[in-house]
Image (cartoon, rainbow, N blue to C red):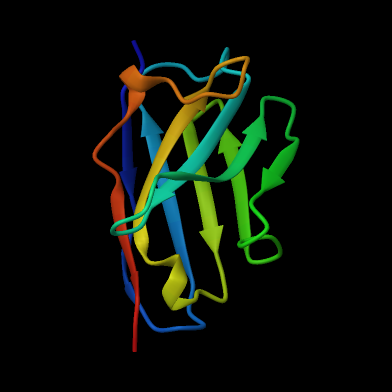
Length: 119
């Protein structure tokens, strides 16, 4: 069973940058699609970005052009580079694997990492 631990969150001013990391305790080499989700206070969790094992990426419209997702299957890590951050990016960010039908794997949810964008 894979365990996922997110890190790299913090408080940043609008326009700033952060790099989130997700460390997997097991191998993610066989997981085709990995993704980053976020949940803002009072809102449902949303999918922010995905990356396949062959490097194809997708992004939510709200982060397109500002966020970059990447993975390193040899180091079992998933990353999210976030630039030009906005207050509406404030949320707890989670990484997870996606099933073949595009749903997150419930057993893999970690504690997440808090990102707060505020002046």
